Length: 177
Image 1 (cartoon, helix red, strand yellow):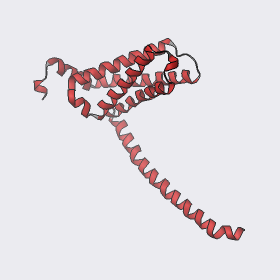
Image 2 (cartoon, one colour; image 1 turned 90 degrees about the vertical axis):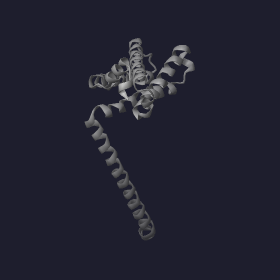
Image 3 (cartoon, helix red, strand yellow; image 1 turned 60 degrees about the vertical axis):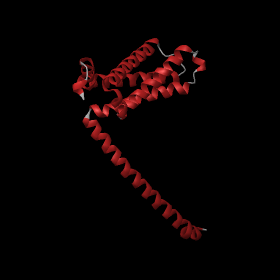
Image 4 (cartoon, one colour; image 1 turned 45 degrees about the vertical axis):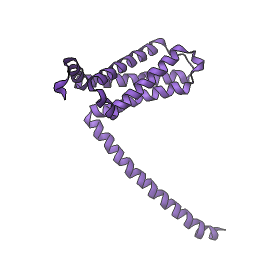
């Protein structure tokens, strides 16, 4: 399949699957998460977000958009068969649409909940780091399996509490009365 690709497409593919590129994008995701936290903090205090944070967030969005465009160019339809590809595309698209809406309309007309939703979707890009760091992937799988065990334990504990509650109501309550 790759034998039929153009040199530009091969170079784009090699770039976006390289470890240095993925590590730099992971660092960018972490920095973006810090900016999202700062934006939410400023908006919760009803204080205007500093212009440098807005400019940095838009720059990061531009980098995300460029990354998605390069991946779509390199992988074409296969990009959309990858879960992280669809997640990245959705998060970038939603953030881009909301950024355009915010730029074109007065701030009072844009519901704050929608803006915060777009910011939360940006954080979902951090899930992509699972594919970059194998250790993190193993840790998250372990957490997932442990959460299943914890959920079953909580269900059993609830059943025991219900049993003892019924027992106490039927047998102990009449004695106390």
